[in-house]
Length: 321
Image (cartoon, rainbow, N blue to C red; front, side, top):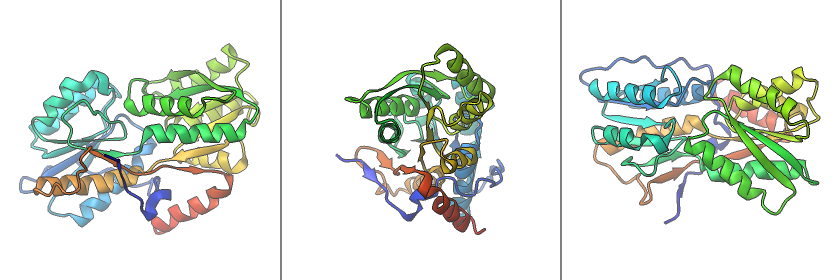
């Protein structure tokens, strides 16, 4: 069974409305509550907040909220979900911190409420469906960026938040697969547990420990900006190929000026917007939106230097600016 791939005009707008305010956590007794639980604090999720807000405006009979765990840790995320279940939440969509070690905990949540996954899937659990990117395909797109930027080969170091999360593992797997048969090698990937200070230090340490690196890959949204800052501070911007993910303003600025080769863009706004609507329909008994394999894939695209202005203009237009 092929994955269900949603192609829509919003494919360039993953980061729209980045300044949207967080949704208040008020559980109205007469309304079913749906929650979107992220894996850790990051500006990447501002677009998802906007998606939740749009879904809420279209479905006033529900209370919808986006929740950040206090820390990007399995136990803390699990406790947050258990608290939501105790408060009567009817559906939870979660980006699992570490699916491999969360199976029992996620199954517990799934036995008590409608459980969906996003961003980082947990396919071995009783989750109903996953809505998000194909992280393997996104990794292959990162490989395409590297191959175009380094036709003669090179040595890459990767940087990511959560090494155990499926989204990280699959992006790394996809990139390695996409680099097969080339002279480009992804030699290692360093994790930072979504710690911004540690993320930058990982890059600084790599510059010292591996002076022969010719390429760096930021697998999470904030990793590319930290790579940019570390290279800038070391006077090496433009000397090392940078492959990015997502549309942080620093990343887009680097792509436009040519110090970042290109970036692979996701659509967290659509994950949240379409995901909340999907959960609401499911709770009403409409399961027509759930494909047989439980995978709803929203495509990723590559944003290069020539695409940045159009992309930015589209973001402003969608945000009404």
